[in-house]
Image (cartoon, rainbow, N blue to C red):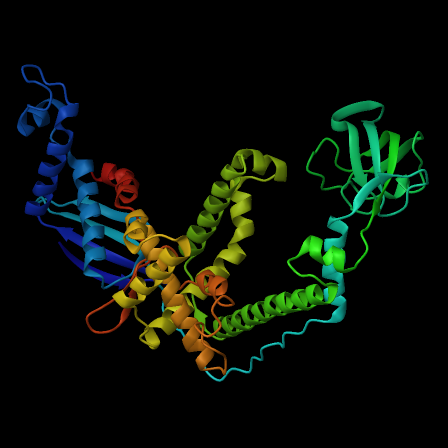
Amino acid sequence: MNYTVEKLEKSQVKFNYTASVEEYNKAVETVYNKTKHKYNVPGFRKGRAPKKVIEGIYGAGVFMNDAINQLIDDSIMELEKAGEYELVAFGSVEDVDIKDDGSVVYALTMVVKPDVTLGAYKNLDVKKSEAKVTAEQVDEYIKAEQTKQARIIDAEKAAEKGDLVLIDYSGSVDGEKFDGGTAEDYELELGSNTFIPGFEDQLIGVKAGEQKDVKVTFPEKYHAENLAGKEAIFACAVKAVRVKELPALDDEFAKEVSEFDTLEQYKSDVKSKLTEQETKRAEREYEDTLIEKIVEGSTVEIPDAMIKQEADEMIHDMEYRLMYQGMRMDDYLKYLGMTREQLADEYKPQAEKTVKTRLVMNEIVKAENIGIEDKDIDARIEKMAEEASQTVEEIRKTMRQEDINYLVNSIISEKLLDKIKSYNGGKSAKKSEGADGASAEKKAPAKKSTAKKSADGDTKTEEKKPAAKKTAKSAETKAADAE
């Protein structure tokens, strides 16, 4: 099919198509073969009636709308296959018309990958923070372990902050009890901020056997709308006051919580582990700062369709996580007091930032000719097999194409971070392996895409393509207008 191209604003391209009468008739034939079983024609078994007979009964244009949609689908597939334009979203179908000679004209507006003007990404003034661990941090860590090993015992005293109180409580608003406001044998740590503000403070000083009315006001933005901003009274029966009896910090404690024989050995090991964690944190922070500075200095006009697509995918990912927690998205939205559209609007700023980061990083991948070879994938699979105590063949059998794609993008990302850090005085991702892994995968150049090395050496990163079926449906109204 012949077409001309018009470049529009916001990374949109209009393709003005002309399909010859032969191409249109071929599309009609394709549609007839796909749909002929749907027509009831007297004297013929379903799917056996000739096209001319069906057209004679149902009208000459019975296959027209679907044929035009078929032409549109074919056009998009040809554009994708040609690869001259990186299509990222479908825009619209316009100006559909069947000419007197039987040819068909129509216009496709598609959103294409926007041009990126790279800012500086070499010799940036970004310093890596030094990994320091103080004696106070070590003490805090050990104190937390000490608290985990504490014995909980009943005490004949007034409750203090940090103590636990065992209570029965019953809440009411204007004298009426409400759902979720009643419990028995609830163990509450005073000062933990588990309950709404003011609740725990009013239980400081109570003793076992006492009754206490706790008066609080629910926050204005409380998740239960019927309670938001309301004053409530919780009648509390204090059944016990409990304290934490901490173990002594000595060699016996060290033996209990670690593989070491002395407290000094344990402290030394804690400092070593905290230093390792801090080193990784500093490395991630350095990488993040570098990337943020590169992205801020680069220019790209991001199409609204790409932002919407990313926001929708973020919601889909959240929906998937909620499902594994046994929660439905509709229930979660109800809890938030939001619609799906409102949630998408909230995600759009982060979605825009994510898309820009991906586009800019992809541009550096191309500028630096960063590619991937089979040996890179083989090495990573070998490592996965070793970690899983399996053979390479066993790992390969379990891998789907999307797993391979993810692996490819992870390797590309690590190479990209290597290159960026080498230009800015930082260590390579390989030298600081473990510290870089999470950040590298988070900064994957192309989300859920396949990066391939082309014959001329350039790295092609394939963005998501619009679905042809959706395009066909979108064309129905326009095709109907042409009938």
